[in-house]
Each structure stands twice: as structure tokens, then as C-alpha cells.
Image (cartoon, rainbow, N blue to C red; front, side):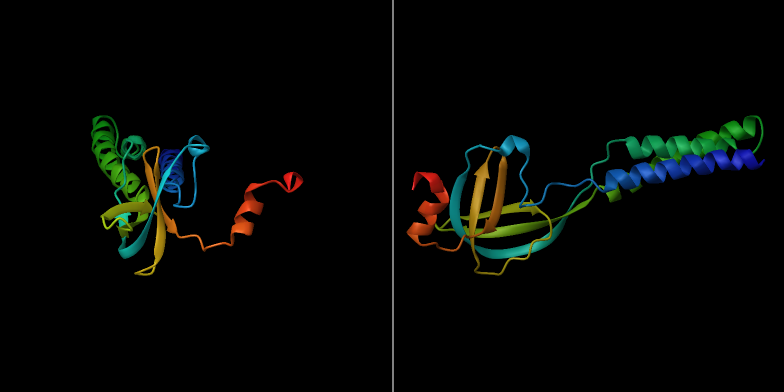
Length: 175
């Protein structure tokens, strides 16, 4: 009887570890770039923050949670009863495990994001949802970077004297 309970407990521990690991994966932050974005042209527009609010990005189930939940539930159910009863329990617990596993995966894969409303210097108003809980100030000047299917909103860079700009572009050996 003891080994019949240990096996399902190990299966549940495996389910929990896989679901927790997938729950830690998220979208890249607004200040992170992927390798394929390097050296890619982006357009830049100046604007001002009109409004922002924190939102949640809905989780996307890959089916892994449901599959692991069904397997674990079936393992637990098969350890309850004998013969035909164990088979019926395995099926019922497998279905319940699939439902619970799918819900857990969905919840763990949700991420935080920020919906921004920006008035561009051209007068147009645009909205975009960016990953992470960002805190802007209403009226804050920003840069809207777009390209390769991405749009980012980042704080405007402070103005620099022309000499500082040139020295940051031209290598010291060329001066």
C-alpha cells in the first residue's frame, strides 16, 4: 500500500516542478532586446505620456499542464481501489488532473504589463501594451521605438551638448 501512495506523490511533485518552471518564463522587459533585434533599423518618434495602467497578459496554455495533470491524476486514481474500480478512478482522476493542470499552467503563464497612451509630437495619439509594470509620470517626455514587429516606449534621453554626442560616436583614436 505504501508504494502505491509514493508513486502518485512523486508524479505530483514532478507536475508541480514543471509547472512552476514554465510559470517563471515571461516576455522580455521593455529594456531588453533579443539577438535578432541587434543591428535592425527602428523608427523613433517623440511623444508625451497621456495615461498608463497596469494590466495582466492572459496565459497561454501549451497543453503541457493538462498532460502532466492527467498523468498525475491517473496515477493517483489507479492507486485507489482494485481491478475495475482502480481503472475507473484512474480515468476520473485523470480528467480532473487535466483540468487542474491546465488551469494552473494558464495562471502561472500570466504576466504583468503596462498599457500606455502616448500623444506623439505629430499630434496623433497611440496606445501600446508593453511587458512589465512600468511607472511613468503623466506628461513625461518619451521616445516610441518601432521596428521588426515591436514597439517600445522609453523615457526621452536628456539633451547632451554637441561635443558629448560627437565624442560618444567618434573613437578616441580618431580624434
